[in-house]
Structures are given as C-alpha cells and as structure tokens.
Amino acid sequence: MSEQNHRKTIVIGSGPAGYTAGLYLGRANIQNLVFEGEQPGGQLTITTDVENYPAFPEGIMGPELMEKFKAQAVRFGTEVVSATVKSVDLSARPFKVSTGKDDYTADAVVIATGSSARWLGLPDEDAFMGKGLSACATCDGFFFRDQEIAVVGGGDTALEEATFLTNFGKKVTLIHRRDEFRGSKIMQQRALDHEKIDIAWNSVIEKYLADDNGNLKGLLLKDTVDGSTRELPVTGCFIAIGHTPNTAFLDGQLDADENGYLVTRPNVTATNVPGVFAAGDVQDHVYRQAITSAGTGCMAAIEAERWLAEEGL
Image 1 (cartoon, rainbow, N blue to C red):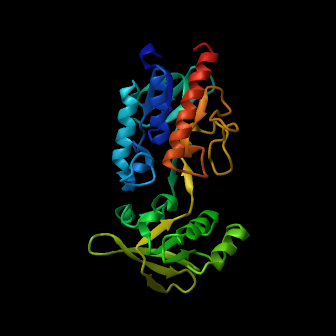
Image 2: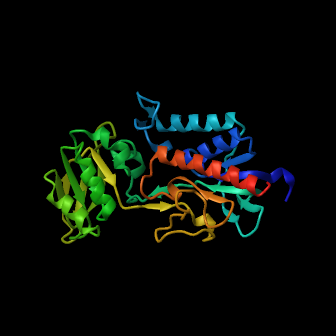
Image 3: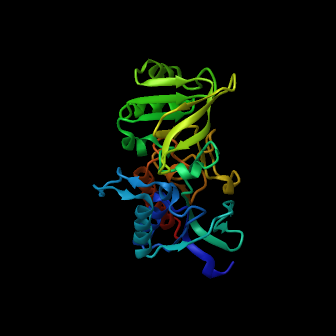
C-alpha cells in the first residue's frame, strides 16, 4: 500500500455526521478523508425545506444545507472523495478501506453511513418525495398543519408517528395490511383511543394519486381480504415501516443490534474495535435527526483525535 493512500482518519459517509466529523478532524489538524458514498450529503439531499436545524430561522433547502456542511469541512482541510466504500478490513491496523477501484489505509475510521428508510416500492414513488410523501414525521409533520394525513405501518414507529402527527393534521389515517398491530400494547391503545386517528385495517396502498401540480392528493387503497379498492383523500403520507442501517459493506466486523444498527459503548461513539467509531443514523435508531447526527459526528472526531494521541499515532 502506497503512502499516498494512507490517512490518519477515514470517514465513511457524508451526511451531517460524516461532514461534521471531517470538520472537527480538520480543525484538529488531523489528515482525514471523507468518502461521500452513493448519496452525497445523505438523506437531507432528498428533503426540501429544513426548518428545524438551528441558525436557519427562515429554513433552508436540504441540499443547500449539506453543501454548507461540506464546504465548511473542506475549508479546514478535509479531503472529500466521490466514491462508495465497498469493503473494509478492520482485523488489523492500519485499517484497510476499499472502493473496489482504489485501496486506502487509515489509523482510525469513523463509520457514518446512515440508514435508509424502507419504502413501499410503488411506481412513481420517487416523484412524490417532498411533495407529500415522507418517512420522518418529526422532520416534516409541521408542513401538514390542518390537513388530512396517512401513516403506513403497524409497529411502534407507525403508532408513535400517527399519534405525533395529530398535533398538526386534522385527521390521521393509520394504514395497516393486517387486522392487528405489531406495536406495544400501550402505543396501540394510545392510537386506538385518539379521536383524530382512524384505522384502515387490512389495507395497502395500490397507488399514489397526484394533483395537477404533481403533489399528493390521495391514495388508492386495496383491501387485502376482498381485493376491493377505494380512494383516501390525503395531502401527506408518512411511510413508517422501518429503516435499514447501511452496514452491509462491513461484513459483520462490528457489533450490531438485532436490527443491524451498530452498537457503541455507553455515552461514546467507540465500537467494539479500538480505533473504529460510529456516528449518526447508522448507530441511532431513536432520534434520527440532522442535529443529533452532527453531534455524534463531533463526538466521533474528538474521540478519534484522543485515541490517536493515546496510541502515539
């Protein structure tokens, strides 16, 4: 391995966690490289208005916010590479990172690859992103004040998001393909008792319906028992069937929980492999917010800096 392909720290992932890690490493004068991956900037690049990130009182477009993240990291010396990491070898130091085309080594690694929302996979689904379709009630619920909203799912996430969205929508329809929920009893009861929540049992979305401007105006629902269909007029639809952490490239080299999220030590971002840190949605299945991801990116960088110093690297 040539010296030119060695970095003190490699950050894998370029959302709020990855770019913030790069920023803090750069300011600490630690040579670092950020791999942008398949979706440079992460999930915020498919988000329109971001109104809950501090310091932007008028809101900011998701792609613009991530460009600012990137520019600030680059300003302090972070090297950004437009490539996707295909595999890593964390069994010995220096760690090996491969894009399939080029190989790199690093003394420390920050995993910030995030997670991907699970979607329904319906035709034209991408066209409705930011036009009524979302996978984050906390992020986008505010935009649907006094409107009719749908939530898809039957687990705790769906039940929680439906209940949360009653703070904004005048009516929330919870769409579930079965006749009973999978979620906890207390969350079920909370949703069932809420006067603003209707339940569409034994139902799946057959098609998204658009208005003349391409915005969501309703859903075509199909009954899973008798096959009948009906239209549900809504202007917002939240898919709450879970997220998949982007960890396949790790090939099981880091400890993960039953849902695949990386496990870090309490109150820190250190993984089970010394010198490897995890930040953002790849290890956070609770908050999944840009600001919390940025916070753990900061933590990972500071911990990596201290670890490198302790190791004499």
